[in-house]
Image 1 (cartoon, rainbow, N blue to C red):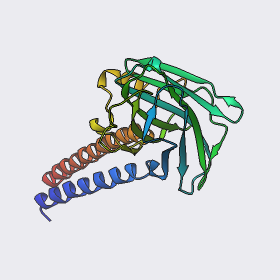
Image 2: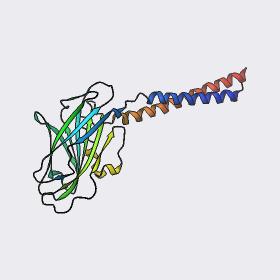
Image 3: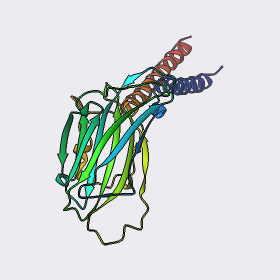
Image 4: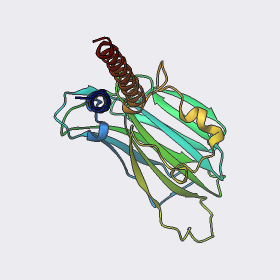
Length: 256
């Protein structure tokens, strides 16, 4: 076997090992596709002035994993009206559920101060209910609701968004001919398109504020980046070691 043949075989082996190491590192990453969030109770459009609607966010899991507690966070984005014209309460059977409220521009985030009383288990759900109302001085606008479910470690499990028109009690203009936008499910590993988030990027800071004491992180998105980076580093290290062994073998061949 010639030195050139040994060199080619070593390079091929290094590439194969790098690919296998990357596959082995990326594969164990948790799959959050088993979680899904739904929004129910949404009308075709909200009517301002005294009408109170109850909107429910429901998270479920279908994988065979264990049970987990949930912390809810609701992000409101308004267009054509002000945040102080919107009233939203998180309610449980025991009454009003305490919230941490943060606002910036046209975006507000309402995050549970405590974990939800329910427990999310396979083939079971956890529900958060919100009462929504609008001041009577609203004439016309739009509101986007984004319900986010987090686990106790602040990893985003699932997200669902929906946008609806808001009309005043004396509105005479016909309702928008555009059909209500369907809610969009977004697992933590997915990135939403700009069109799915009509609020400007200027309010992005509030949309990313921590749901509790720390910044919410998308489990697979954050972990996935570090894993891939480590895989490339390991692959490069294997290639470097293979080249070093080949040079040593070549030197020994010449000496003999």
